[in-house]
Image: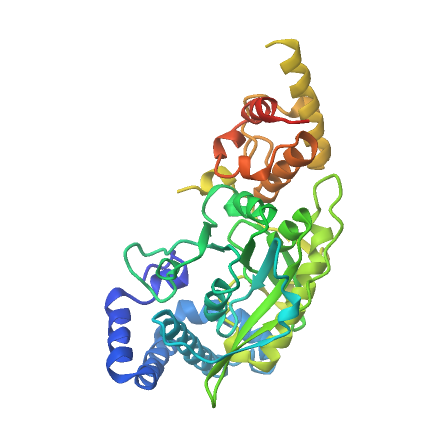
Length: 318
Length: 89
């Protein structure tokens, strides 16, 4: 495993993914799911880097177990079980095996005009992307990092999904200029609101009594272009298996002044979003897939805003 | 450099400093051939969007004319030349 690569790029390989595909095709979803529990156990037992990356979230979510590695590992195992399940469900949908879908409060998503759809690495988030993609003829852009392992068609690889315009977060300005232009054209832009891209502007906001870093870009793009920012979660429900897409009211944004929006003007929106995440994590603690980058309780800073180390937008282009 | 170009660059520098709230900078600190980002003015990706919005609001340049044109942002001079050539107000 490459220790400097992002976790999702250095875990899994062509053979493993091919094997799961075969299982899914030959044995069905249930067989693949049962086998995924063995794989999850393996990673829970032996992948120290992944455990370390997940520990920040687990300690915040389960403070009573924060001092016990054994208990945290148990939580980590349950988290990986759920992650494997979500990836299998996403793959199942990707090959055209649809699940029943329910929508709650769709009214919050405007049918026309630009909109920032704020997703999180929560529950069945990739299904939300798929479902947004099928929505009513609007052009959908998704800001995403390109697959780190070239030529390996991972479950996560967006290239296997048609219809999206993928804006690379590794392009100029982290893709923000392109995203802003898309909003001006009246298109939808999907952004992950729970994890900042390394080097991007972020706010540290309250989360389970501690703080986490979340990106400012969704709120800045929406405020600057005068469009709503609508949080959306996709949740997998079992017995019977179905996906429920939950739309939330647009997060209030600051008036865009005739000058740069400051981080402290955007951080209340980021904080409100973090509260939605916290509520989701209370209901479904093992479906929050947040690996690394959190701030522990003892590190709470007085300054509510934080900007990570600046990187040159020109250098992001590969 | 003719007077029109020089005057426009001066105006744009003042607008940039004002819009981006570059508290510790003045128009004189913005050098024509310095990079806008990192070691130059030290701007970041959110600033890039702010510049695009400034171009739209003050100079009437639609955002779609700017996307995928990273060379515009290489230096202040490149940015000024692009705006001069494409402004509608």
